[in-house]
Length: 69
Ligand SMILES: [Zn+2]
Image 1 (spheres, rainbow, N blue to C red):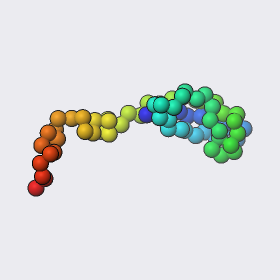
Image 2 (cartoon, rainbow, N blue to C red):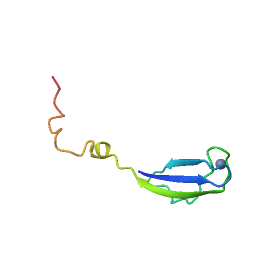
Image 3 (cartoon, rainbow, N blue to C red):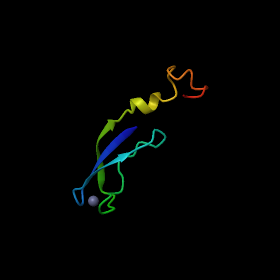
Image 4 (cartoon, rainbow, N blue to C red):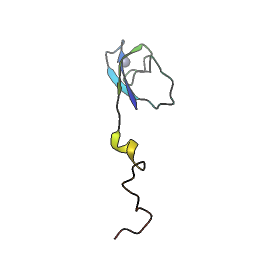
């Protein structure tokens, strides 16, 4: 999931937002400290969860239909 980092122009707070892929690309978010709209996007980081994204898609669990002993 992409993580967007924002900087607040009013209070100087820097905060990050974890966005879903379905969310639109938003250039500004309300400041989490002072609720100001005067924020701007600093940078975006793609945080890829390899383990989670591969869960259930590998062939390693081909025997999962049987009981585990
Ligand atoms: Zn602020």
